Image 1 (cartoon, one colour):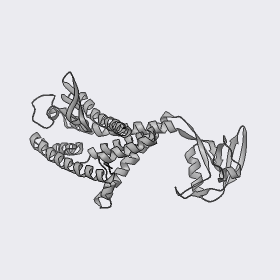
Image 2 (cartoon, rainbow, N blue to C red; image 1 turned 90 degrees about the horizontal axis):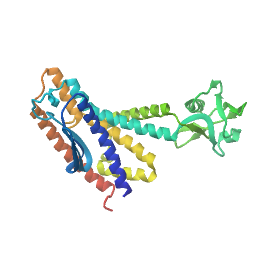
Image 3 (cartoon, rainbow, N blue to C red; image 1 turned 60 degrees about the vertical axis):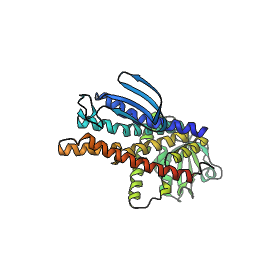
Length: 336
């Protein structure tokens, strides 16, 4: 039950951010929106406000914003195809952009909850070099060798810079400065040197947002590397999961705690945003590619032809999805 609830909430959050991006920009550039849907398949519930119907459908595996003239000829001045290339591109890109915004948001929340590490020692690990040398809880590290220390990252950098050499660490204990000689040890799991201290953390919104942005950019860069490896044939099909696999992972994360669910939500959101920008028929990236072609040839491709290409792409994506779902069911032994 926990798995199902957590998975539905994660899917709902990721999809609603994506579709809201399309929706809000479409409204901003005055495109007529017929339906804002969360989910696919038969409609569970709906409400109509103004010209737009807001609906929830039975399958929480996607959603859509149905706009006037998106895949058909329309003479309405407020239709998608009658807007400028820049306006249409903004609508298409907005979905992925909002996924990246969601990722920044959840990673920032995680960073805020964990806190920003400071130069004050929260805890000295027993039997490690720091304790052996005489460092204590509450000490504030102000200098390592000849370098003045102002932030935690500088402490980590200095420890790994000198590696297994002895460090001369100056701390502020109360109002008194004290000097200690500490020799770092190698942590085999991380491959980094450490002296055995845990920093005191403080809450910082600016720091948290910075971490959220950096984490999102890092995952996007990993996505580029993934596709590079995929094209080179260095990726196994076992490394790819679909909706069933995601539900399984969300369930496992839910058992660990809310921060794990949030972290996975950010990861899924970045993946959805990135994948949607790929130039694959039926995806936003393909529609952006058609707009690029239109800007070069100075006239649009007939909506019926473009719509047919997207329809074929959608069929292939559905077939691929069925294959991946089957592999997920076998891999995670869903019916055990």
